Image (cartoon, rainbow, N blue to C red; front, top):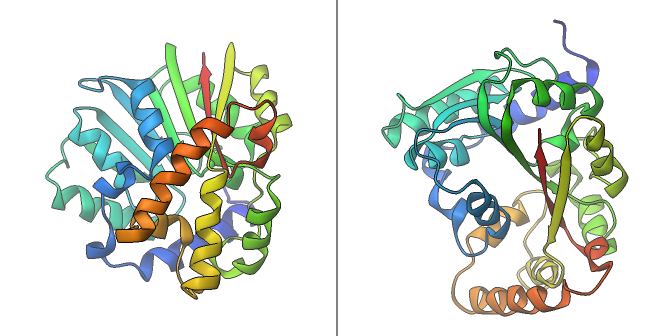
Length: 267
């Protein structure tokens, strides 16, 4: 099937990013460090992955796919970017999980898998890049009847993060659009249960620190990766902000001020 103009744009952008990234720069464990709240939350919901079949949708460089495989899952991982897939395969070889982790270039709108093939589906920052109306039925089709799918996605509302998005244009594709709660609720057309939990409100202050105090160029350094790599005083500040978030996010409607949401859907 011929790729749409949007898919071609996404492919070109992520191929370029992958080609500029060295294997030594790809860290599996940091994606589940204390700062990776959303990934750790997804891991808690999935529980024991040993022997489970999981699809990593939009796997990027393969960090999460390799992590799931190291936890005992049988992983199929896909991405629209062939350069990203090439890097992910190297990462799997580095960690010795090539027998449990397989990578393919594929679009989310046209999944080449059998009906009800996967116990779980996972995606980090993928739904806001793709055609949700076309991909949601495909996700439903390949998920087992008792299965769950978890997606970590950016939200469209917070003014601070929207300023960052405007400044960091070179670090984002022109076709991506952060999700709204209305779009999330649309998933109810395809799934029996849809729920979500929001993360990262006060922790966004770290972005201001990166930009104003540390003078980090948001077009050269992806701030979300820098959060995962915080050390020293910055790490302590981030820990305090996460603690504060856990309190403030109990306030109704506070989710509208968050950077990310974790969407959990069940068939």
